Length: 538
Ligand code: GLN
Image (tube, rainbow, N blue to C red; front, side, top):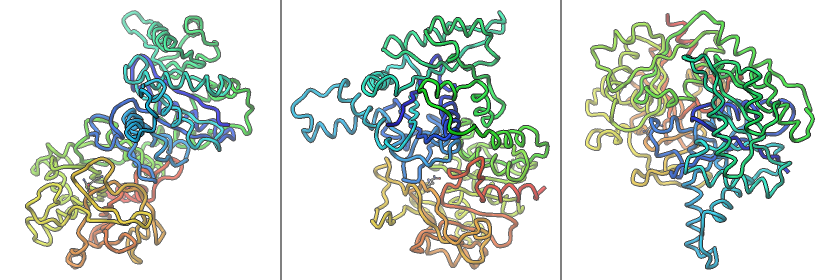
């Protein structure tokens, strides 16, 4: 049976529970164990698919077509294990499942309650498909003390009773703040948070203390005493310079060996930190830099394009260059300001997006990239915008648009009518927005003599998708006559997947999201090639 590790958070959110869980997973994996990561989110949305990135950061997409929390991206990047639909659950989905069962009369006349029915469903999720794993690490979203997370904490308390304390471990991640005015480190918030956790029946076995500076022994002792945790299990995590230092830092603090000791397990192999040390060194020591503009709507929030930022950094690692991400808000991008704003930029990227706001700024920036031969990568919405720009300015279709933006224009980009998934035909819709996009891994066939074929070095690729609209295939010939090639199509030849320009050093648009599959130790070829072209641009 798998052993279960639960990671809760305290004091404040955004302390890096996801990265801590992912780092621990890597370390255990490197010691020879099989690890699965899961995320339990306490909000009522069924999944984050309909949420704005302003609310919840990026929506991550798995191969099997789930729209999930961005922490699943960290999990995949740190462990190389592809996450699945069943690895992320929300309160909304739990209630939805329970209520559906209730309507079918499956509770046999009983009163349906949070305990046991909701907590039972949570426990089923935790255990689901875990028999082949050595460890399942479950991260609980939010912080202890939130009303919403109560059923989850109650469920993990029960779970530990069900499967036995020796098979479950509770890790609590808290903040140990440093007060500048009094030059002191404060343990009280941690004590309070643990008190809160204990009041609902969960005694942490390990406390990870996030701190700006190293925590002196006397403070650790205090935490150990007041929180009833062995001093060896009070582990500090001091802010790292890059996230890739996190596994190195947790190893130094012996997090993984404490976990193994708890479960009375031995390491099967020595931990290999070599790859992390190598990329950390490149990131921290490389002097040469390249400026890449990300022109989008959600640039104010750092997490809105998390996987994209990471993929660009991976491309930099591959090319031994530091990538500076210059975020530009497309809504406030005036045409007249473009040359000035993009003066020191060597590559332009338009990421995925939704809705009308900010589209004209994106289209103007694409025109600038095309005319000035600046490397350009358009992802999903970015590719659709590149199509509209080209149609308007090169094919002279002045009314060209996407039906997502304007229902009355000429829809060179329109709602997908239908597509094939696992042999079944799925119909497109813009009426019901939850989970109805073309989601997850689909194949694309690449043209023999295209740039994209050279970049991937393959005829067929599999990439993750998340879109409702598509470039209208009927325009293919018109575009190609003017030098924009549809160089990758869905296997049935109906959905344009990739576009590229003939007379341009590097201008590519893709209907999928390559960023979801880039890994620090296996940078995605498209990002490596884009960064290489940008590096050569100036
Ligand atoms: N809004 C566009 C569509 O649904 C693009 C989506 C995206 O960029 N992920 O097709």
